[in-house]
Amino acid sequence: MPQELPSVAPQVYKPDSLCPAEVLLHEFLAMARNLAAESTLDSPRPALPEQTGFTLSDFPSEVLSEVFYHVVDSQSAIGHSAAHARAVNLLHLSQVSAYFRHVAINSSSLWAMIIYIERVNVGFLEAMLARSDPSPFDLTFVEGADLSAHDQIWSLIFANFYRVANLHVEVAEGYNGRVLGGLLRLPAPSMSQCTIHFIGDRNVCLDDFFPRISAPFSSYSPALRRLNLSNCFISMKYSPRSLSQVSIRCIGNDAYNHSPRLQLRSLADWHRRFDCLQPLDLYDCFEECTEADTARIAAQTPVYFPSLRLFTLRTTSTEVCREVASIIQLPATCSRNIIIVFSSQRMFEMEEAATAVQAVTKFVPVQTEYAECAISMGDNRPFLRLIAARPRSSVITLRFALSDLKVRNWNAISVGTLLRMLSRTWGGGAPTLATNNRILYQIWTALGGTLSAVLSSIPILHLWINKESPAQFLLHDIFKHLRGVREIRSQTSDLWANSTIHHLLTRELIPSLNKIRIPLDDATTSLAVIKGLGCFLQARREVRTVVFRIRSSTLRRMGYAAFEEIRSVIRDVSRDFPDTVSLDWAELRGQRKAHD
Image (cartoon, one colour):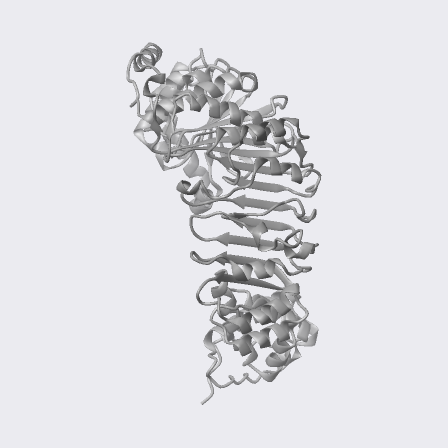
């Protein structure tokens, strides 16, 4: 008995009343999805319903192939599971009718979408490769026990490697990448993206895979744009100049620092090679400098990346951070994300906090005018962010990752001195002086001193500080350098429930403050926030404007009564505000709305 078709209402199309192409494709796509979902490979071909007017066989093969493309590509998974699911979808569609089968079999781009090699029948792989020819295809696999011994599979892949557009390889623990090494020695004329990840606590030099040739892919990968390497690295001396994205990451346990890494002096090989490079991500991938390296680096010409838009550096070494800053020359328009990790694997000297600040601030262009500054103290990953006034897209983020630090010189900061300073400033109530807080005190003090000229003219300050954080006690010295701030934007409303924040926003420290922005959310209506805001505004009557920020999603959830509900909430929150304060509200990612 043939399977019944899915319950899709038949649609009659007449030549004089055809729908727009987009609507037609959308309706057919819905039906095709149901056909693919409810058909099974073992079931007989479902019979098509009788229709008058425009039938499925009247679809041009080009249109039908495009619809098939969206149906087959409807899987959200990645890697082998997605390719296998796409293959099943395509086989389902090919069983709907003889016409569907003809279109599916003769669309090479469809077969290029479904190629996978893990747990695949060799005959089916051969059919996929033959039917996808000449279209480029993606190749994703994990090199491990399941694939290492399948010589027939690799013979087929090696013979068709010239068509691979996106290569994604993971090498399982216990495997040395023998198959990957074979692929790296083949020309790759179609490849636009290459991602390689060695699983486990190791870092592998890929140059060892092709010692007799000058570069990977037999020096022929003219279309390669994106190169992503994890737990491995490669010499960039002979890399294609067409690269627009490079990521080299050493991830995993910090304990395997003995593994090989890039040498800093090798950055000289990058000079004038990457004029198209836009994002560059370097993640714990450099060896520590030797004295000879430092002298050689000081004498070499800086490496300039004229098109770079985003540079990310993460390192556990302040020396590496400082040397990279001296080697690499970044455009003024390039955003920088610099991360220093205080690893729990080794013992620290207290003075290293100031050394780390000196290293990261070398990436800050001091001649640039900055319009905004952000300070965050959350999750043991505090950061300082600077947003340039011109160009607006340039953002500098200096981040410090601290977790369970071991500090040798515990008394570098006198406990008595710090307590006296806090007591004199706020009249008592000191924070818990854990190791991390001592380091934070050093970091923020050093940042304020080093970037004093940059911070003094910034008009807008963003604060990521919650009501329970002790960090407010540790920011006094950097706030002394923020005298030009006219507007505070708190990222959480419960900041105002923390009484200590009021002592940081005094007239002495922030004399020009006249405006604050706060989120309008559930926490805003708490008694602690309402009381804190009221007390602050009574004390700082020169603050004349309060703007409540509300998310677009919240507005949509409120529906047609949103405006009235917002006005009501603002009236409740502002009941203790001085009469001189002007109230306003703004939709995040939307146009500002005035409050009556």
